Length: 142
Image (cartoon, rainbow, N blue to C red; front, side):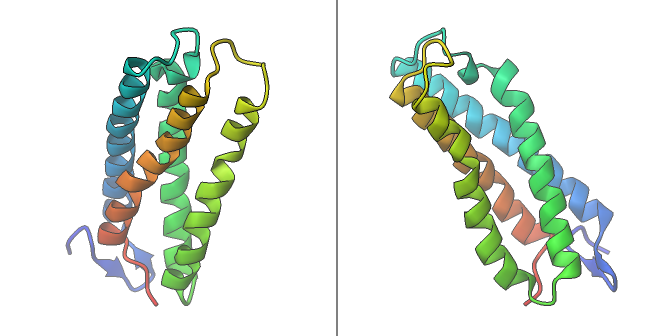
């Protein structure tokens, strides 16, 4: 049985773990590129959210939560493809709320519009790594 195979009860654990690994590794790579670009474009060093110590654990947590949610939807929804077409963009937009709030407050030193935009792009970075891996290894049923 390949990693993409679904059992009669749903997605295999091998496929789930492979998907999680790709989502985590890809998300970390993409988010590191985004952070480095933001720093290169002038985001101040005081803006600690663009350090691996801050975005790294959040990237891992987000990718793992996305893996679990995707697996649950695929395994338990009669029309997972339709559900995911709704859930993925809604969750992605909702995940931007803390960053938008950060932009409108003075709570973090060094907060700039560019720095917050970089944080927002990181959400899309994790999705860009995760969704193709999930679709390939944990394909939704329609």
